[in-house]
Length: 81
Image (cartoon, rainbow, N blue to C red; front, side):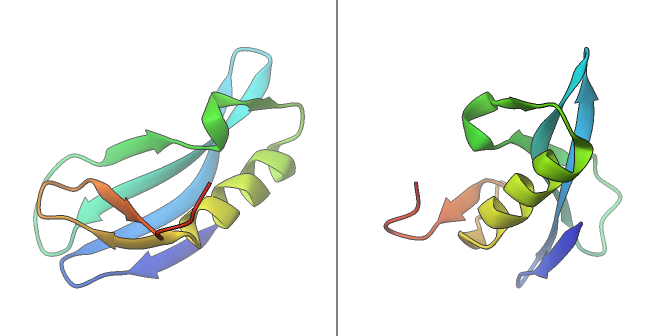
């Protein structure tokens, strides 16, 4: 699990169970506010057999996030895949 701080948000990479596999996600929360998390599936929706594989994919995706806009949407590096 990795955490990245932005001006108004915090983002966290993780993995969540999905049937008999795991999905890579990034969770975003506005700092200092009591709002629900915004959850983004990453790694093109791919499912992984191991939690650690999904978590690694989520962390790699989080490293490509440049900023979070005011609506809580991820802004990716220009050439991020």
